[in-house]
Length: 374
Image (cartoon, rainbow, N blue to C red):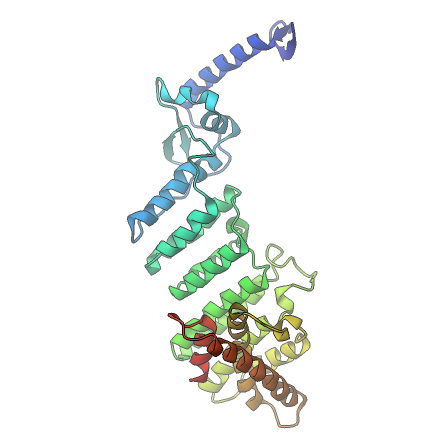
């Protein structure tokens, strides 16, 4: 007969595997009785709760994730074995309910089949974004991302970019910045240049919609600079070491700051660069201009749209910055020459969009251009 290495604590003899399994099941049942009357050993603290939203469907998504993904992620491995392993499920459906305490909440354990019961992270997240119709719906996002990160569920870069874009359209840039500030909890790392551009694009869009109002423009510049400061965090771009794709080295990022700085100086500081920000960001942009992606050939409508979204803020910033430097100065000559390059690239992208014919909804890049060129 084969024997396991399970030892009797009092006498120490070897037990056969069958006996060991029987003892293990008895111990599990005894443990279950303890769970019903004592606080559980937990992996983490209290589980986040979610405020009611604008639709029952959206509420259902938050509830489903909480019950089937987030709560299990807070349980000890012993509890997880009970809810996930089919051979233990009968223990949850017979006799006294099995409950655990997480924070101040008492939760009854329910059997979960991971292959059938758990929501798909990416599919349901996409549906969640589509259902967020009211600005207040976004209040749940930071807690949702924290719990998702805690449960080791990951979103793709495309999902994060869409999330930022949708939040910006709802005027909730504050929520996006809050999630980025708490990167160690939310997992929203600003390491991808496209994601950083989406964050900055949302910030500038709010200033544009306010017709470059003084308070809104100043706030937008401050928020954009906060984003740049965040990039220095090791959880975002990794500290001092910089690679080729580092967002901190990309002209799209500095160009967005230059546009905001020039807008504030032109419209609200009497055309004076009172704090030197226009000069600072011009010099930085000149030093970091090299970016083949900006001038690469494009042959699709999506590429034309991306080109417009990317280049229009820089193009506008260069145009406005020229007035702050004397004709013939190094900066003035550089700004004029590179504005002309961007002007040609933008014209080419607009021509490609026009040739593609009318659309039910204008491309975001075209809207971006029209807001500035109008």
